[in-house]
Length: 286
Image (cartoon, rainbow, N blue to C red; front, side, top):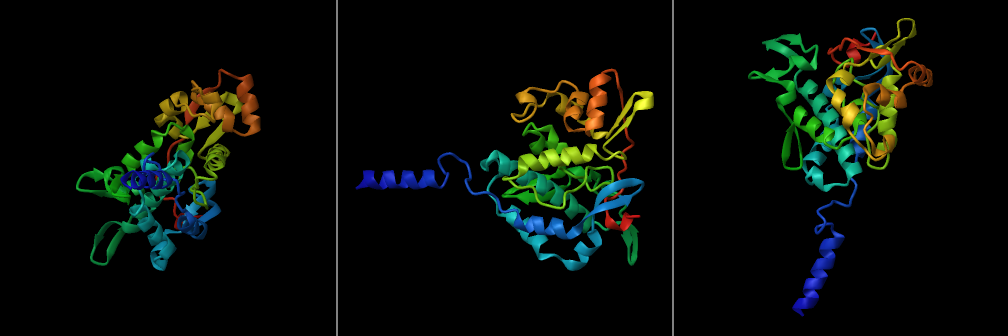
C-alpha cells in the first residue's frame, strides 16, 4: 500500500513539474498586452526623433488601469523566474523590466514637490532616493524576489542573447521603441528579431550610415554593452557562435542597403549618437 502511494505521489509530482523544478504552464501575458496596446502610441516624434513609440503616462495615472495593477499582482504571485522555461523567462523578465520602469515614472511625476508646486520629472534619471539612482531602487516583485532595474537587467543579460537590448526600455527618448504588445513565450524569437530590426531602422537613434564619410552612427547602447554584442552566444544567432564585433552583429539586423555597404566596406568607422534621456512620454510628442 505504501509503495503504491509513493509511486502515485511521484507520478503526480512529475506531472506538476515539481521533480524537474520547471514550471510547465506558460505565464499569461494578456493583461500586460492590454496595457501596451492601450497606452503605447506608435508613429510619433519627439525631440527630433521620428517613428517613436511613446507612452501615455498621463492617461495611465488618470485611468488607474485595472489591467496594469492585475499584471503587477500576477508578477507578485509568480513562481521564481528561474523555474520557467527559457522562452518564458525572456518574456516575463522583458515585460517586467518595462513595467517596472513605467512604474517608477508613474510613481514619481515630480522631481521636486512642495505643497502645490511640482517640478516635473523630465527624465527617469531625475528619480532617486537617499542618494540612490533609480536603477538601484526597489522596482517590483517577481514572485517573492524584489528586483531593482539593474538587477533585472543583469538577469536578462545572463540569458546570453544580445537582442534583449532592443527589447528592454528605460523610459527614455533614445531607448529602443517600447513595443505596443507584450512579449510572449510563444512569439519571443520573432519579437526579439523585430525589436532589433526596428531599432536599427531608426536613423535618429538606432543606426545612420554616412557613406560620404564612411561613418556608421550607432546607438550608445552598442558602446555601453559592446561585450554583449561581441561575445554572447545564443543558439539561434550566428550558428551559436559569438559575432566577434559590433559591426558583424549589426550586419544581421540592419536595413538591406546598410548590410550591403558594410559587406563592401569593412573599414567603416563606428561612432555613436548622443543619448537623449528625456522621457518617452506622449506629452513630449511634436
